[in-house]
Image (spheres, rainbow, N blue to C red):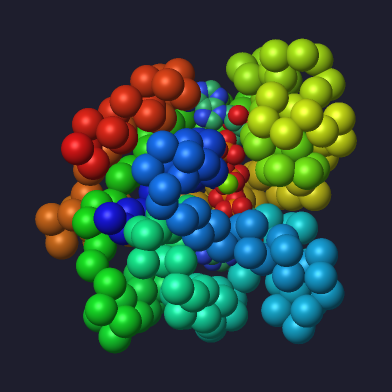
Length: 214
Ligand code: AP5
Ligand code: MG
């Protein structure tokens, strides 16, 4: 099963993708995570993406499509994938159609996570992750069961993203409305779009996604 999670920054794409990985064995393909890893490793892709990501803008289509194309050649994608944060422009969506056709991969569902702007801004402002295993947390809605200790791996090391500040969040939201939101119409017209209430609590969103996936 191969699916796309579509939604603005803070919609909960990463949170639900990680749950689908645990529950269904699907592989999470987050272009944001891949680009952050490239920045940390100082690769040519990372060097090209660093400044643009910090500002909250979108990295160039060619770079991101290249990253995804290479990733789709890894054998683990046969388990099924969740595209998290890709595609993000119409050009990326067209390129994905072609890549999937070339590689013989079927797309089963595009799930839109609908939220509202005030909520996503609050979610992003409170977000942090385990520096070791990447489990996501939030200052208000999802704290570790033992304060300061990751529920999943026991690490006491946490981090916040460089683009989770007020200016970059504004730019990310603008980029979403300008470049990514047209994909809702794009996939609706292709008869692939389904929606969940991204404002519901994390477990309810998971149930709604499960109901769609069967
Ligand atoms: P990316 O990493 O994809 O960031 P994003 O789209 O801005 O989305 P986020 O990761 O911020 O949000 P999310 O939907 O994953 O929410 P999360 O689950 O963490 O991209 C970063 C940058 O990389 C881009 O700005 C761009 O520069 C570049 N980039 C990446 N892909 C690209 C592409 N394809 N093309 C070009 N450039 C690209 O949840 C947020 C918080 O809310 C968490 O704290 C979580 O615990 C909490 N939460 C989640 N769900 C709920 C819920 N239901 N109720 C309450 N709290 C919740
Ligand atoms: Mg994410």
